[in-house]
Length: 373
Image 1: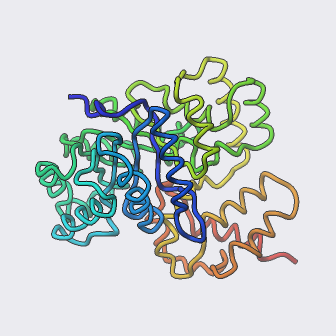
Image 2 (image 1 turned 90 degrees about the vertical axis):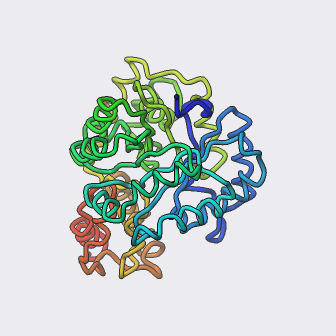
């Protein structure tokens, strides 16, 4: 049986970055985006309990599941380690997610953000076994994992749990041969085990939509689509990749994405050569490879807005002028900790899907923005 039999097309709506207003999901804008997405022939939505501090699931209920019959959409949710502490917590957590989303079952349910450390925690709590029992009860239809670690860890998980039906990995042209993320190697493991691939972070948290000037010039010379379009088409062009997710927070982003994903065409040889040049330009900038998932901020004892400070650092490397200093001093450290406030507890690094040396990078940020003579 094809687990994607009810999925239309190969592009999904990732609901981690939604339109916001005054700290809440802008349900009017989100509803319009949902309508346009479905009217355009797409139907796959992805969320997790922790996205937007729980507001993503309830926004899906208000803007999608209350407004459309169940057969109009495919919905994926995830089991996240920070919301259960023992086996007995898993069933009520899943049931609370179903209630929050306003559905009786999920189409896909993923063991969230699996790493070597997380996998051991899930095994300690019998999470895989418990989830599979809940699948048998009809709480969800298809079982999978989202993964952020080395290829050898993925191989171990797929060997121990052949019941896994789908694997969600980070996959984009910047991470393709990155030794920390290992996108290519993880993809190859999925192919070895015959697992369909779901792609997250195809635009690397927006980094591949906002390119350095010389990289943008390379893609503009093709006289084709937007920078994001090339990133999405790169990810979707590999055999076995069945779904590419994009976290869209505006109708403009959605319209741009759907424009070229509606009638998908893989990158040409000329376009692939241009992507290679763009990758080389990015690597020469030595940018902090943060995707702004914000997993690092939840447990920070000093409430440091780590992704925003890293964005300031990258802005400083890419552009001349005053804006990076202004955003650092007048926006992102107001009511939040500065980089120098880091107590080096390491909680952020344990939760970082990119495996960034955050404590060391914060020292670099502090040296750049806080210690001027």
